[in-house]
Structure formats: structure tokens, C-alpha cells
Length: 402
Image (tube, rainbow, N blue to C red; front, side, top):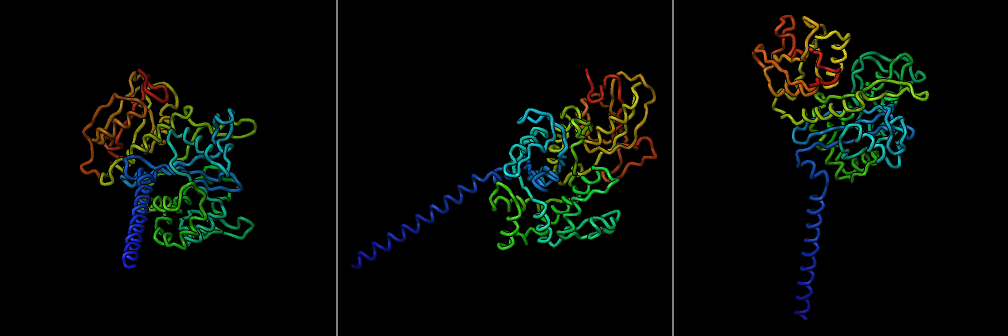
């Protein structure tokens, strides 16, 4: 009888140990096979598509590019009116034509092709759920430079200055458009709200991890990620300094096609791919390096007889995040070769600048500031910009040709 009890105890112990072993195995296996675990340990970016959806269509779409090693990020705003050859339907149309709220993979694919990247994760938030998330976070803080009075049937007003938007106000803020404002201003407003939302999500990250709050919060998100993966992703986002995150809109030339005003990306889409590539390279710069956040200044001079060449090139360089110090004509208009004069003293950065237009004709000028933190004095010609670009006849408007 005693032996039977002992055998039963041993059997029970073995069973418990077996179950414990199986649990540990599956835990380790699930962690090792979790895609985000691999992404966070590797030296590569995580690209997350955020879609704010209104009536089954994207109101705003943002690609959030995050580098785990440096905890730096950049955002690209994808206008729904981008004009592309939609591969799935083999027709020229708006990019949001392929959007299906039940399955957004086709929309993801078009964005991947546009930016030249892979989308790691997607998060869809309906307009109503955006309001609920805003209330759950205790509001989103935004600075509004100019007041908006008696709009939306007079029910909601936005005074100038620092505002904390609750859910109802947030929904109005991202949807209203004034009769005399451009679509760019409306998009800029949504960009600012999105970054305010990301900042608030970071500040309230611990609160959102409370089990009861977490279940409610994650019910407001439509995504293929499980809750653990979502939590890990938002843990990473919580460490981002949103004040240093650049937001760029995918721009282009506006044309009317079949009664629609579509935005066609510059240079058949090659420009935005290169901007994304350069941006990702910049995110990899170490945090302790001031170069990671420094904006380099450029003087653009036209050394040819082509009218407006310097102005158009300045717009191109702004797309890559450079600050244009001045635009004008060179000392003569018969430059055969495009040349870059570097005053920054940073060889890697000027060569990176030259790569944008494929210019290798670089001359180094020893007029850099005494300290990296010292601003250039633009009243002194030697210090008016980090780089001076003189365009020659070998520049076709986009690249230097051989």
C-alpha cells in the first residue's frame, strides 16, 4: 500500500516536471520565434504602418521607421491622393483605391513599393477609436498657433496656445478643413496630432500596461500582432525623443486625371526611395554623436544659363532634410563641372551630401567653426553655410552626369 502511494507520488512529480519542462520549452520557443524579438536584436529598422481610418478609408497613413539600436525614428506621411500605377488593378489611380479595411495587405504592398522598404507591422485605428484612445490617455497636448473659432457648427473651438485635446476635440482636429486652407495645412495638422499621440503613448506606457487598461487599449487597435508583441513595440516607442523625429510627406507634382487631382511622386518615385534610404542611414548614427541631430546648411548657386535651376535643386535638397541657407547665381554661368565646397570639416557627411546628386567633385575649405555646437555666422561669407553647391552644365536637374 505504501509502495503504491510512493509510486503515485513519483508519477505525479514526474508529470509536474514534464509539464513545467514543456511550458519552459514553449515559452523559450515563442520568444525566439517572435519576429519583433529578432528585429530588436538585429541591426535593422522596424517599419510600422499606422492608418487612421474614417468611414472605411484612410484619413491619414504614416510609416513609422524606428532603429532599435539608436532608438531614433522618422515618419513618412503617405497622402491618399498619391497617383500610382496600381499593380493589383493595373490602372493609374489613387494609392488608397486598393485600401480594404478587412484586409490591408494590398495597401501595404503599394506603400512598400513606393518607399522601397518592407512593412514590419500595421496598426489601424478608426476615427472613433482614436477618440477613445485619446480619452484613455487623458488627452493629447498640442500647441495651436492660430485659433479656430466657431467651426464644426460652433460646438468646438480651438484657442491659440497650448491645448489638451480630449477625444471629441481630437476627432474634430484631424478631420476639419477650412474653406481657404490648402490640403497641405490639413495634412500638417494631422501630422502634428499623430506625433502628439505617439508622445503621449510613450509617457503613459506604464499606465497602458495595467492588465485592465491594456485589454481596453488593445481593443481599440486593429492589427495582426498579438498583445505581447504590441506591448513590446510600444515599450520601444516609449524611449523615443519625439521632438527629434522628422516627419516628411511624400510629395510630387499635382496633375488632374479623370477629374481627380493626383500627386505624382518626383522622378517616377525614385526620389522618395532615395530619401528613405538616406533617412534610414541617418537613423543609424549613434545617439552620442551630435551629427545624428544636426541639420547641415547648404548654399545653392547656379553656375549655368538654365533659369531656375538653383531654386529647383534647393527644393530637392530640402526633401532630404537639408536647410537651405541661400539660393542664387554663381560668379559666372559657364561652369562645366558641378562642385561642392565643404566648410563643415566632416568628410563622411559631405560625401553623403554629394551622393544625393552623384557629385564627387568636392573641395574642402578650412573654415569650420571652432566648436561643433557653434552656429555659423551668415554675415561672414566663409561661414554662411556648411556646404556650397555650384551647379555646372554636367547637372541634369537631378544628377551629375559623366
